[in-house]
Length: 428
Ligand SMILES: [Zn+2]
Image (cartoon, rainbow, N blue to C red; front, side):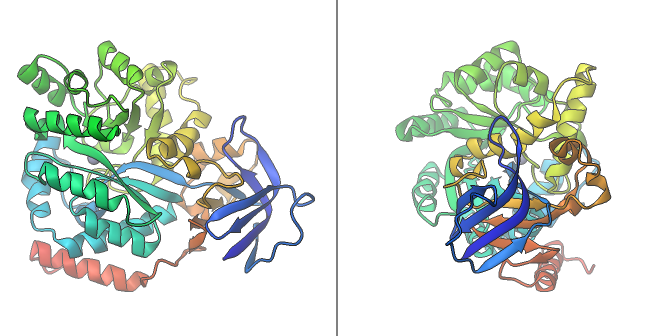
């Protein structure tokens, strides 16, 4: 399908940031023109022409760390310490989840991503084949990361998934990873590092999320999680860490040397009282930071606007410096850096030849006025209410509050509630 967006303000996210007044053309799944109306090709034929009414087109947000199907456990286990939360509440429910739960609760998450302008997610969860199917049926771009740990799957199964799920379709890819140092035996971590070196592949995992995690790792091995993993050669081909809240100077040197990404998850870190990540330090050291929502059991929502505000607000409080962590840096984290961390180089800008993964921000809402500085409005004042349209791979999946993901909204809610009752054995 060929689509023309006209009367648009366009923030391509290319440096230096500027806003183009003009139009953007989509041919199939690719952006074929971005520029002024005067210079636009006149002989292109379109299936649809969308009057943007001078609202803003920009790249979709990239959620660089999530566990989508944890929508099942939204507001089920709250106000508890991390280890109790995981062991007493989350793991027992996860043990009961099958393919059906993974599919429907992932689709529920997709609906929420779309309302928040999120066009791709870096996913780590239970049943990657079911999850891939769910994302794919919705038309949602996804990068799954292995969450292998001492409870499963086997290393052979992880390798099989790495090979098979990278060939599924052009919306899906699969990266090497593991849950966390504290859920893996040393031998397993060494085997994962060997596999990363075999495939020359980056590796992602939860790392240094809590003080307790770091202290226990030091108790076991005498070094921090980052140091331990680096000694094994885990990050010889890059990768990154989710959270990275509690890091030493030595850890930071390793993160820089290995060109790792920091994926920060501020809402989850707040709710689980894990701490505030040293984002200013990462920015000063030129370490790329991306943003993830983490799962909806620890957040509890999938909202990039809230995460962006928390990244900058928490950094300012942590450093006692209102000038640190500029909103423009944060907008870059939520778009360009996320795309780079996820290996989605062709989804990071709105430029000719890029994949058509974009959103329209409604500037006519009161919270976007006046238009002194649109990027800062988005980070400091923006909300899901401003997302008028979300397009992925050239398809409009969400527009004016309506979803186009191959399943009826009410039908999906009913199915999720049925599955929820089955799992909990409760009559809600
Ligand atoms: Zn997580």
